[in-house]
Image (cartoon, rainbow, N blue to C red):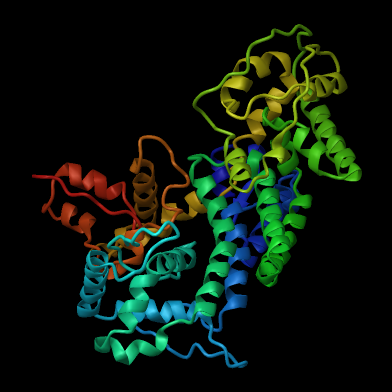
Length: 498
């Protein structure tokens, strides 16, 4: 608060996008008390935005924990083959993890596994596909799941299934008889495929968010509802998967209900010209529709009081498209799961503007195409025709749906504060971390690094060189120093010729 006070922006504080740790609940409560001491209205529940990727990851984590008797190992080189469950069956996730670690336990095994793929392709060891053609596998390595990487369990299982024929042939080799007990039965392979299908849905949601460099709040509700609908549909069509999807839905529903405490979700979605009231009208119950309309109109009334006298004229301008903050992510998710009908809603436009009620009704009569650029819409057409909503859009549309970029600013602190630079002043340390983050890209990409890179699942973290230290000690060029400052612990650095 002292920083906000010094900058004289305390009264302009908006919403806080935080992960779902309990300490952040305490933080918001304390923040509310500090605002009240300054006679500034502030509601901790209403101003709290839950980090969308964290919520999806939490639901996915509970699905994984419910399906396996083991968790991540602190030592990636250790593996525990105790995959047997109390009922006598084997835990397929643990079995998959143990097999990956066993094959990757030494350089010799890794090399033999690669040779198995190459020779198997040449000699057609892997059978034929449904068209009668010999199965050819890519020469790939198995991937480990990593504690700090979201979706790493999904990637591990997906690669494991992709190389099934090579794994089975490798485990039957006399050279590998010490790990032959890890070979799966057909039923266990089928169970692993089912579990992979469950994890694919949150992976697609995360991947869709990564397609937007600036994921904002306006598409969070539609994305989250389609995420839950996809799990519900999968469980209904495949009863064997329902025990997994029900657990994920239990946790997803918990956080979904918490969104009711924050008006910003509804208001931001309403201000997205590609949604307006259409999504709410198409998929919500009557009571929730009335409540949403009331919430939006009450906020419009507050903003109208702050605005000067407004013109009652309006100009028709075609809805702008192109770059800016895209709103295409929900359509990609809907197409993936055959839910496109959830996004089909269009009404004609009739321009007019007088009261708050009339401005609301005129705005909801039309619907912009999915690829409409929200920034251009409100900068051009929307700002002229809907001045009250334009003022709201300036405050609500920039709200971030993810807390990941804020965390990433300081997540690579160990790369800056090394043993050789452990006396940096806190102020300088803060400035360096912010500088590193700001120099990463010429354009902001808040989702860069959220997806798990394959190399992060192949190479131990300790193998990564300290390029920043080399640059600061004169062993690298200035260009390399800039690149090192712009990188973090999850990004590979490409050295250039001196």
